[in-house]
Image (tube, rainbow, N blue to C red; front, side, top):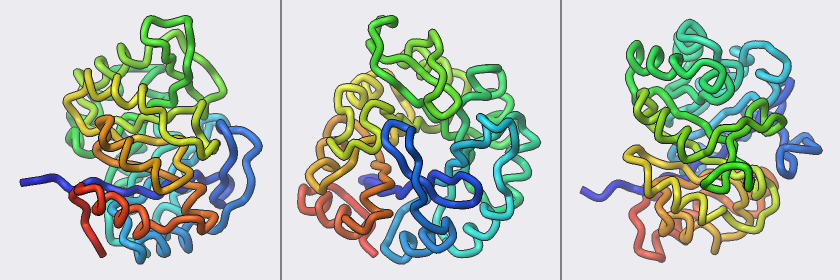
Length: 255
């Protein structure tokens, strides 16, 4: 059976509002997360990703009431990330309507957390988010960052991806900070490198700006494509992207 390509709108949330910037900087207001989630659900989104982009920076938990209100409006998988520090946070998010949990900075601080979450809730719940920058400091040319791209680590992105897969991550959300918000297209080299080493699904993120950017990301090895500003600004709809993918012969779930 052919697995459908997923189209995933992303809601980057700060202080209860959707925000969007370029390369994780100069964030501007993009709307109400509940209203946007409902709009994308009605357009045929396969999933919604909700990232509280300042929770880790502010050293606080994700805004649970916004997660709960969003989950009440959409009936597709909801992935929530930001501020997750332990299994109890995961349990609370799932109780408030999340279907999957995005994990980034906390896993880097304590890699054992990946296995703890996967063992308790199942690998299918755990989406390991990698915010990646190009860097000559590591062999692959890509380094992992934390705190919403604000802090570079010494971790090679490919080595880290291999490790978290072994520890139990069920999916990789691979976000190119260099491409984020530029609308110049996904980092296809990064997607190919991740595909070569990953046995779990890959979500390509960062850089979508036109219809012609989505098919190459799938051809490079992504199982799903994630975008934000092109949807928030009304430049494209989820349906537009799915029709483009279908026209290229890719399997999609049409609304």
